[in-house]
Length: 492
Image (cartoon, rainbow, N blue to C red; front, side, top):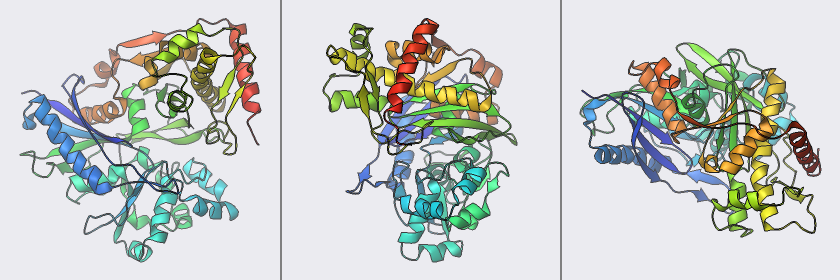
């Protein structure tokens, strides 16, 4: 009998089902998008019921496309968009409001109130995260404050407050399991990452009862069983759950202290495995990588708002390019002596600067700066920003990074990858497969049920590598120019 592992990657734009064979090879995928509900305030919501329906449907599509026997699937792993939060009725299993998406800052006033009470440092010290509406706590607090009767129901323990992973686990198990994993819990801004438990005082600041929060379970633990509403003849266990960036870290094989990955998307998540003890920093955030077999690992993470989105901006708004594929060739055609930099602070600067008032700027242009030089500056800004975070992580942790494992669409750009290697002065390595978030959760599930072994699963990965080729003096000159450009945008 053939054995397969099923992965579900529930992301911001849609839901993917992934099928892996007994060697961990990705065989097939199916996708379904869901609606992006954005109002005139810029608030962003998703319909949780639509996401759940799509999850069931996308599994059916995957099985039909692959032609496999459903009974040959051993286990399920789930990766999910992080920080997006929702509240649902515990007994009825229905949301009391739409999911508030990670991009949505509607909880800003709640955070400002706690800032005024001088609670920001307490929150950071307990959770590893700067007080921000980006994380789940302020989003849930907003729902409890603004939906009629919600606070009263929460006080009685009649509501479930959770992230997308816990919603899917709850629905897939028919309401029998309300669980989340350590990686997702650590991004809610309510989880004490030293005590490894929901922090009652922090939850109290947000007026969220601990009784409404999910049971925190190892990322390769047991999350119940599902038959996908009768589609499978026999239920399969859910044995892997991780937030998407953590899934990508695991899928990249960054299992040891100091191993680091970057996901290049609209923005970028740079994540470094720092081992069994947390390191607290004001420049990058501290979270849990995962909990496995009763042991947790910690990460430092830096999030950058505009990386791949810079390329989209150059295409859609500036009309400098007609497709992302043009950027590499134009960058090669540009005058290598041109000293133009783009600092893409369109919505402020994230890690390691944390200046929400910073504004974007082209800096250092000359009379001979043309289209190619502007495109080159935009492309290189991606690598400069990631290098900033890598250097901050090395300084904060005291660990020298030996290589950078990367994933995401922009990794197909050879110019960018070589420039990234040159700026960071370390090898950059790209895996053959792209679905790293889903791969990580599926691998965790496959390992949990004994289908996979770590040694061969992560020991033979084939990668494309870029190694540094720039002279040290040239690197120092270019990076120094970047730091000067950034200094012109900062307001604090």
